[in-house]
Length: 52
Image (tube, rainbow, N blue to C red):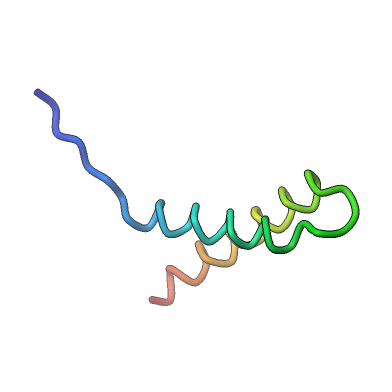
C-alpha cells in the first residue's frame, strides 16, 4: 500500500492565496482580480520560502 504524504507548505500557500484573492477581489472583474491577486500571493510566498 503506497504512503500518502501531505506537504504543509502547499496547504499554507493555497490558503493564503485564496484568502488574499477573496479579500482583494472586491473591485472590477472579480474573477480576473482574484486570479491575479492569488497568483501574485503564491509567487511572493514561493520566493519568501527560499529565505526561510
